[in-house]
Length: 175
Image (tube, rainbow, N blue to C red; front, side, top):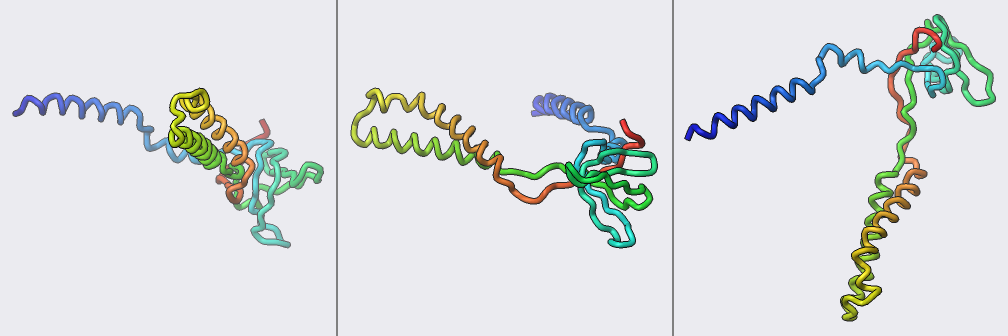
């Protein structure tokens, strides 16, 4: 009865060692959370100004100075400097999510259903293994792949929500 407990302990010990080796040390997690905003990143700053207290300013980080962050709101706009002392928060854009994954799944499903319905018509009319009906083994995977690619392309152009932001800190100086 005890013969199975020893191998079980060995397996459990190996898994514990592997888990401990893979897990990051807890002291380094906080340091990895802070993303460093660099020149060229799309950022938003929460700036404390007299005209609009704690207003968000969005643009591209054009320059990082020791005491100032310079942001360009648009491509042809003038650069706007903000003193670091007045910047209450800095966030970097992660982009806008899209429906590429859902589009791939729906495209593949639509292709599989259409090929399946075509094959069902072949079986129902007793055409069996003839040239158009026997090709379903080849046409199904190709149709699913083409449907997934087409659905993914269409889904990537459909926005899924608002722009996502990640808290960051500015680099010490320009790279």
